[in-house]
Length: 304
Image 1 (spheres, rainbow, N blue to C red):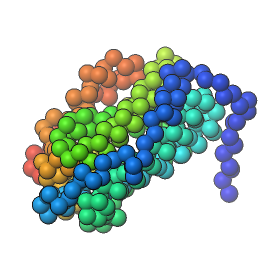
Image 2: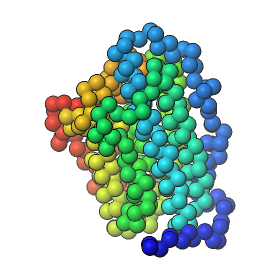
Image 3: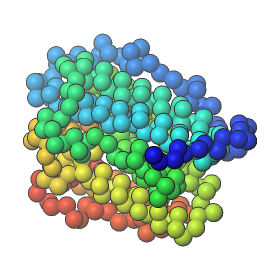
Protein backbone atom coordinates (compact mmCIF):
# COMPACT_ATOMS: atom_id res chain seq x y z
CA UNK A 1 0.00 0.00 0.00
CA UNK A 2 1.42 3.38 -1.01
CA UNK A 3 2.15 5.93 1.68
CA UNK A 4 -0.43 8.66 2.16
CA UNK A 5 0.83 12.13 1.36
CA UNK A 6 0.94 14.17 4.53
CA UNK A 7 -0.24 17.75 4.32
CA UNK A 8 2.19 20.29 5.75
CA UNK A 9 -0.57 22.48 7.20
CA UNK A 10 1.06 24.10 10.22
CA UNK A 11 1.92 26.78 10.94
CA UNK A 12 -1.38 27.87 9.30
CA UNK A 13 -0.70 31.45 8.27
CA UNK A 14 -3.68 33.16 6.60
CA UNK A 15 -2.55 36.78 6.45
CA UNK A 16 -2.21 38.11 2.86
CA UNK A 17 1.31 37.64 1.51
CA UNK A 18 0.80 38.50 -2.19
CA UNK A 19 -1.12 41.81 -2.37
CA UNK A 20 -1.94 41.60 -6.09
CA UNK A 21 -3.33 38.08 -5.77
CA UNK A 22 -5.24 39.02 -2.62
CA UNK A 23 -6.80 41.92 -4.53
CA UNK A 24 -8.00 39.49 -7.22
CA UNK A 25 -9.60 37.36 -4.49
CA UNK A 26 -11.34 40.40 -3.03
CA UNK A 27 -12.53 41.56 -6.45
CA UNK A 28 -13.88 38.13 -7.38
CA UNK A 29 -16.16 38.18 -4.33
CA UNK A 30 -17.91 41.30 -5.66
CA UNK A 31 -18.35 40.16 -9.27
CA UNK A 32 -20.52 37.08 -8.95
CA UNK A 33 -23.25 36.48 -11.50
CA UNK A 34 -26.10 34.03 -11.94
CA UNK A 35 -26.46 32.23 -15.31
CA UNK A 36 -30.22 31.97 -14.81
CA UNK A 37 -30.73 35.65 -13.99
CA UNK A 38 -27.95 37.67 -15.64
CA UNK A 39 -28.24 36.46 -19.24
CA UNK A 40 -31.01 38.06 -21.36
CA UNK A 41 -32.41 34.67 -22.37
CA UNK A 42 -35.57 36.22 -23.85
CA UNK A 43 -33.36 37.76 -26.56
CA UNK A 44 -31.88 34.40 -27.62
CA UNK A 45 -34.82 33.62 -29.94
CA UNK A 46 -33.46 30.46 -31.61
CA UNK A 47 -36.39 30.41 -34.05
CA UNK A 48 -34.64 33.15 -36.04
CA UNK A 49 -31.86 30.79 -37.16
CA UNK A 50 -31.60 27.99 -39.67
CA UNK A 51 -31.48 24.37 -38.61
CA UNK A 52 -27.80 24.15 -39.57
CA UNK A 53 -26.92 27.25 -37.53
CA UNK A 54 -28.74 25.95 -34.47
CA UNK A 55 -27.06 22.56 -34.75
CA UNK A 56 -23.64 24.22 -35.01
CA UNK A 57 -24.29 26.42 -31.98
CA UNK A 58 -25.57 23.47 -29.93
CA UNK A 59 -22.40 21.52 -30.78
CA UNK A 60 -20.17 24.47 -29.89
CA UNK A 61 -21.80 25.26 -26.55
CA UNK A 62 -22.00 21.57 -25.64
CA UNK A 63 -18.26 21.25 -26.26
CA UNK A 64 -17.65 24.37 -24.17
CA UNK A 65 -19.63 22.71 -21.38
CA UNK A 66 -17.39 19.64 -21.51
CA UNK A 67 -14.28 21.81 -21.25
CA UNK A 68 -15.65 23.91 -18.40
CA UNK A 69 -16.72 20.76 -16.58
CA UNK A 70 -13.11 19.57 -16.73
CA UNK A 71 -12.07 22.78 -14.99
CA UNK A 72 -14.42 21.96 -12.10
CA UNK A 73 -12.15 19.08 -11.17
CA UNK A 74 -8.80 20.64 -12.09
CA UNK A 75 -9.19 23.53 -9.64
CA UNK A 76 -9.67 21.33 -6.55
CA UNK A 77 -6.75 19.17 -7.69
CA UNK A 78 -4.47 22.20 -7.76
CA UNK A 79 -5.93 23.44 -4.50
CA UNK A 80 -4.90 20.17 -2.87
CA UNK A 81 -1.41 20.61 -4.32
CA UNK A 82 -1.24 24.10 -2.76
CA UNK A 83 -2.23 22.64 0.60
CA UNK A 84 0.16 19.70 0.42
CA UNK A 85 3.04 22.08 -0.28
CA UNK A 86 1.74 24.64 2.24
CA UNK A 87 1.77 27.38 -0.37
CA UNK A 88 0.78 30.94 0.48
CA UNK A 89 -2.84 31.43 1.59
CA UNK A 90 -3.54 33.88 -1.25
CA UNK A 91 -3.29 31.00 -3.73
CA UNK A 92 -5.62 28.77 -1.75
CA UNK A 93 -8.26 31.45 -1.25
CA UNK A 94 -8.26 32.47 -4.91
CA UNK A 95 -8.59 28.92 -6.19
CA UNK A 96 -11.68 28.26 -4.09
CA UNK A 97 -13.31 31.09 -6.06
CA UNK A 98 -11.90 29.81 -9.37
CA UNK A 99 -13.60 26.45 -8.76
CA UNK A 100 -16.93 28.19 -8.27
CA UNK A 101 -16.45 30.37 -11.34
CA UNK A 102 -15.58 27.44 -13.60
CA UNK A 103 -18.67 25.65 -12.32
CA UNK A 104 -20.71 28.72 -13.22
CA UNK A 105 -19.19 28.72 -16.73
CA UNK A 106 -20.14 25.06 -17.16
CA UNK A 107 -23.72 25.69 -16.04
CA UNK A 108 -24.06 28.75 -18.29
CA UNK A 109 -22.67 26.92 -21.34
CA UNK A 110 -25.01 23.99 -20.68
CA UNK A 111 -27.98 26.34 -20.38
CA UNK A 112 -27.04 27.98 -23.69
CA UNK A 113 -26.93 24.64 -25.48
CA UNK A 114 -30.20 23.58 -23.86
CA UNK A 115 -32.03 26.77 -24.80
CA UNK A 116 -30.77 26.58 -28.36
CA UNK A 117 -32.50 23.25 -28.73
CA UNK A 118 -30.68 20.72 -26.61
CA UNK A 119 -27.35 19.89 -25.01
CA UNK A 120 -25.22 17.04 -26.38
CA UNK A 121 -23.81 14.98 -23.47
CA UNK A 122 -21.01 13.45 -25.56
CA UNK A 123 -19.20 13.79 -28.93
CA UNK A 124 -20.89 12.30 -31.98
CA UNK A 125 -17.92 9.99 -32.53
CA UNK A 126 -16.82 8.31 -29.25
CA UNK A 127 -13.05 8.36 -30.02
CA UNK A 128 -13.22 12.15 -30.03
CA UNK A 129 -13.60 11.94 -26.24
CA UNK A 130 -9.83 11.56 -25.99
CA UNK A 131 -9.41 15.00 -27.56
CA UNK A 132 -12.06 16.91 -25.62
CA UNK A 133 -12.11 14.95 -22.37
CA UNK A 134 -9.25 16.41 -20.35
CA UNK A 135 -6.02 18.35 -20.70
CA UNK A 136 -4.24 16.39 -17.98
CA UNK A 137 -4.04 19.01 -15.23
CA UNK A 138 -5.38 16.63 -12.61
CA UNK A 139 -2.67 14.14 -13.49
CA UNK A 140 0.02 16.82 -13.46
CA UNK A 141 -1.23 18.22 -10.14
CA UNK A 142 -0.28 14.99 -8.37
CA UNK A 143 2.86 14.26 -10.36
CA UNK A 144 5.94 15.16 -8.27
CA UNK A 145 7.97 15.35 -11.50
CA UNK A 146 5.84 18.30 -12.70
CA UNK A 147 6.54 21.45 -10.76
CA UNK A 148 3.69 23.66 -9.66
CA UNK A 149 5.31 26.43 -11.70
CA UNK A 150 5.09 24.24 -14.79
CA UNK A 151 1.40 23.61 -14.21
CA UNK A 152 0.76 27.34 -13.78
CA UNK A 153 2.62 28.16 -16.98
CA UNK A 154 0.93 25.49 -19.07
CA UNK A 155 -2.63 25.88 -17.79
CA UNK A 156 -3.07 29.45 -16.60
CA UNK A 157 -0.55 31.32 -18.74
CA UNK A 158 -0.70 29.27 -21.95
CA UNK A 159 -3.99 27.39 -22.40
CA UNK A 160 -6.18 29.99 -20.71
CA UNK A 161 -4.46 32.87 -22.50
CA UNK A 162 -5.24 31.21 -25.82
CA UNK A 163 -8.86 30.96 -24.65
CA UNK A 164 -8.83 34.67 -23.84
CA UNK A 165 -7.41 35.53 -27.26
CA UNK A 166 -10.12 33.46 -28.93
CA UNK A 167 -12.86 35.13 -26.90
CA UNK A 168 -11.52 38.62 -27.57
CA UNK A 169 -11.37 37.89 -31.29
CA UNK A 170 -14.91 36.52 -31.29
CA UNK A 171 -17.08 38.37 -28.77
CA UNK A 172 -17.70 41.34 -31.07
CA UNK A 173 -18.97 38.93 -33.73
CA UNK A 174 -21.60 37.51 -31.37
CA UNK A 175 -24.57 39.49 -32.64
CA UNK A 176 -27.05 37.56 -30.52
CA UNK A 177 -27.50 39.59 -27.29
CA UNK A 178 -27.79 36.54 -25.02
CA UNK A 179 -24.72 34.86 -26.47
CA UNK A 180 -22.70 38.07 -26.36
CA UNK A 181 -23.56 38.76 -22.73
CA UNK A 182 -22.61 35.24 -21.70
CA UNK A 183 -19.27 35.54 -23.48
CA UNK A 184 -18.60 38.91 -21.82
CA UNK A 185 -19.25 37.49 -18.35
CA UNK A 186 -17.07 34.43 -18.91
CA UNK A 187 -14.32 36.64 -20.34
CA UNK A 188 -14.43 38.89 -17.28
CA UNK A 189 -13.81 35.90 -15.01
CA UNK A 190 -11.11 34.38 -17.19
CA UNK A 191 -9.15 37.64 -17.33
CA UNK A 192 -8.81 37.41 -13.53
CA UNK A 193 -7.65 33.80 -13.82
CA UNK A 194 -4.94 34.82 -16.29
CA UNK A 195 -3.83 37.75 -14.13
CA UNK A 196 -3.55 35.38 -11.16
CA UNK A 197 -1.24 33.02 -13.04
CA UNK A 198 1.04 35.75 -14.36
CA UNK A 199 1.29 37.48 -10.99
CA UNK A 200 2.32 34.23 -9.34
CA UNK A 201 4.92 33.38 -11.96
CA UNK A 202 6.33 36.90 -11.93
CA UNK A 203 6.68 36.71 -8.15
CA UNK A 204 8.39 33.31 -8.30
CA UNK A 205 10.61 33.96 -11.35
CA UNK A 206 13.65 35.37 -9.48
CA UNK A 207 14.05 32.04 -7.67
CA UNK A 208 13.73 29.78 -10.73
CA UNK A 209 16.50 27.22 -11.01
CA UNK A 210 17.51 25.95 -14.49
CA UNK A 211 15.58 22.74 -13.85
CA UNK A 212 12.44 24.74 -13.05
CA UNK A 213 12.72 26.58 -16.35
CA UNK A 214 13.10 23.26 -18.20
CA UNK A 215 10.08 21.90 -16.36
CA UNK A 216 8.05 24.94 -17.41
CA UNK A 217 9.16 24.64 -21.04
CA UNK A 218 8.23 20.96 -21.08
CA UNK A 219 4.81 21.51 -19.51
CA UNK A 220 3.90 24.40 -21.83
CA UNK A 221 5.06 22.53 -24.94
CA UNK A 222 3.02 19.49 -23.97
CA UNK A 223 -0.06 21.62 -23.35
CA UNK A 224 0.16 23.32 -26.75
CA UNK A 225 1.10 20.27 -28.81
CA UNK A 226 -0.81 17.48 -27.08
CA UNK A 227 -3.89 19.34 -25.90
CA UNK A 228 -4.62 22.50 -27.91
CA UNK A 229 -3.40 20.98 -31.19
CA UNK A 230 -5.25 17.76 -30.44
CA UNK A 231 -8.59 19.54 -30.67
CA UNK A 232 -9.35 20.04 -26.97
CA UNK A 233 -10.80 23.52 -27.46
CA UNK A 234 -11.42 23.53 -31.22
CA UNK A 235 -11.80 20.24 -33.06
CA UNK A 236 -10.64 21.82 -36.33
CA UNK A 237 -7.19 22.29 -34.72
CA UNK A 238 -6.59 18.53 -34.78
CA UNK A 239 -4.72 17.22 -37.82
CA UNK A 240 -7.37 16.37 -40.42
CA UNK A 241 -9.97 16.85 -37.69
CA UNK A 242 -8.90 13.76 -35.78
CA UNK A 243 -11.86 11.45 -35.19
CA UNK A 244 -14.49 14.18 -35.09
CA UNK A 245 -17.33 14.21 -37.59
CA UNK A 246 -17.44 16.76 -40.40
CA UNK A 247 -20.35 18.65 -38.83
CA UNK A 248 -18.48 18.88 -35.50
CA UNK A 249 -15.38 20.26 -37.21
CA UNK A 250 -17.34 22.88 -39.13
CA UNK A 251 -19.59 23.85 -36.20
CA UNK A 252 -17.44 26.75 -34.99
CA UNK A 253 -17.38 28.43 -38.39
CA UNK A 254 -21.15 28.11 -38.87
CA UNK A 255 -21.96 29.27 -35.33
CA UNK A 256 -19.57 32.22 -35.61
CA UNK A 257 -21.05 33.38 -38.92
CA UNK A 258 -24.53 33.16 -37.38
CA UNK A 259 -23.44 35.39 -34.48
CA UNK A 260 -23.94 32.60 -31.95
CA UNK A 261 -20.44 32.51 -30.50
CA UNK A 262 -17.51 30.20 -31.35
CA UNK A 263 -14.09 31.16 -32.73
CA UNK A 264 -13.86 31.11 -36.50
CA UNK A 265 -10.85 29.29 -37.98
CA UNK A 266 -8.21 31.84 -38.93
CA UNK A 267 -4.68 31.64 -40.29
CA UNK A 268 -2.72 33.08 -37.40
CA UNK A 269 -2.01 31.14 -34.23
CA UNK A 270 -3.06 32.70 -30.95
CA UNK A 271 0.14 31.38 -29.42
CA UNK A 272 2.19 33.31 -31.98
CA UNK A 273 0.00 36.39 -31.66
CA UNK A 274 0.52 36.37 -27.90
CA UNK A 275 4.28 35.77 -27.98
CA UNK A 276 5.16 39.45 -27.96
CA UNK A 277 3.25 39.87 -24.71
CA UNK A 278 5.11 36.95 -23.17
CA UNK A 279 8.57 37.82 -24.41
CA UNK A 280 9.47 39.96 -21.40
CA UNK A 281 8.50 37.33 -18.83
CA UNK A 282 11.42 35.93 -16.88
CA UNK A 283 10.10 32.37 -16.95
CA UNK A 284 9.70 32.16 -20.72
CA UNK A 285 12.95 30.81 -22.17
CA UNK A 286 12.70 28.90 -25.39
CA UNK A 287 8.92 28.45 -25.27
CA UNK A 288 8.19 30.48 -28.36
CA UNK A 289 7.74 28.03 -31.19
CA UNK A 290 4.41 27.39 -32.85
CA UNK A 291 3.40 24.08 -34.37
CA UNK A 292 1.19 25.66 -37.04
CA UNK A 293 3.73 24.96 -39.77
CA UNK A 294 3.72 21.23 -38.98
CA UNK A 295 -0.03 20.86 -39.52
CA UNK A 296 -1.10 19.85 -43.05
CA UNK A 297 -2.79 22.65 -44.97
CA UNK A 298 -5.66 20.37 -45.89
CA UNK A 299 -8.44 19.52 -43.46
CA UNK A 300 -9.16 21.33 -40.23
CA UNK A 301 -5.82 23.01 -39.76
CA UNK A 302 -6.56 26.70 -39.19
CA UNK A 303 -5.73 28.24 -35.87
CA UNK A 304 -7.54 31.03 -34.07
